[in-house]
Length: 139
Image (cartoon, rainbow, N blue to C red; front, side, top):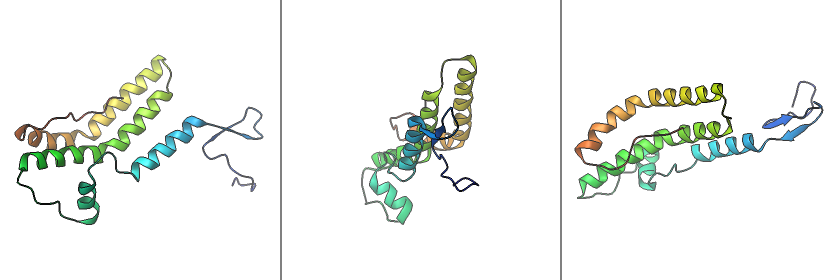
């Protein structure tokens, strides 16, 4: 509610008249997708999530290479997928002006810097165990 006690617009646009709210499907989809990602599985193996959140040990395996590769890829997805999706959704809302294109470049740069340490930690393991996949998020 607003200070006057009237319902606030939340994820909506104020109408041109200023007296009512109009639906904003982009904002609604953006917030829904963010919540679903944060509370969802993020495309990660359920066993990894149980190990991460519940302390449940991963099942024993004799295939160390596949296990390590799975853990590396799951770690990357778990840590980066929601932020990646968030920025990709914002990018789609932008037009094609020089300013908006500069924002895209800035978002990509900030994302790359934010996850550089994680990438630098996982990359040697990925190379050593000859794992597939890329550590990327293209905005």
